[in-house]
Length: 275
Image 1 (cartoon, rainbow, N blue to C red):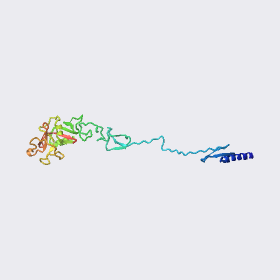
Image 2 (spheres, rainbow, N blue to C red; image 1 turned 90 degrees about the vertical axis):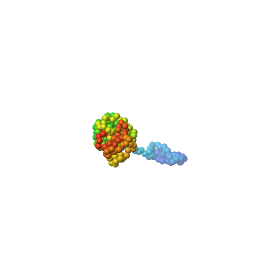
Image 3 (cartoon, rainbow, N blue to C red; image 1 turned 90 degrees about the horizontal axis):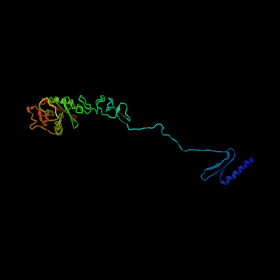
Image 4 (cartoon, helix red, strand yellow; image 1 turned 30 degrees about the vertical axis):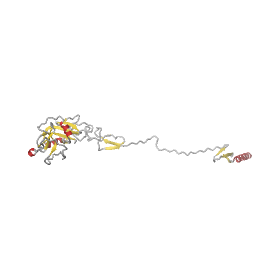
């Protein structure tokens, strides 16, 4: 047996030396002839020895759970809607992607405790600003007359032709119920719009009080805010301060002309709101 192994080794050595290879033995003692190629790799044949090796340079990484997906959004303002009318309180809001319970997208409610009051409500004759426009009881589809006054709208302003006779000062107070004052004519077009409205029959003779007076300085007629009129429509010879106490203006709706009268006389009056 020893002689046979020596013979095998000798034969393997001779073959390897002739091919420029190396000789190795396996664990069983059998010779293994290997050839070395030009690139430094080797291939070998074995008898009863088998060696298996392997490697991997690939790395596997995971950046997120497959079952979870992250979403993003741009938060917007949502407004608290306590009265459930679909319009929220502009002073109470939260930023979120989705509306929290009891919140809406519109923040324009002037009274979030009353569902009958909102920017989309229709004005009624009830002493309340139903539609959040800072006017009270002004003209609307449901409100053409209020407190005995004929209502109309022009240029975004509300007007009331009120036939009940009052003093000039009391008339201003009555106009305050509409969140307004005695009418101020900014131009002839506005005056023409007012006199074109069919007026109710006044309870006293004479013209209709409007906002002009010279109570502060005799002869200097101004509007309630102290500004001078941009145009005038005085009847010929007026204002004349007859009797020395004609300090308030009245307008004859039929002729669109002005006259000065005592502020204490009783006249119908014209109100304006939203000015």
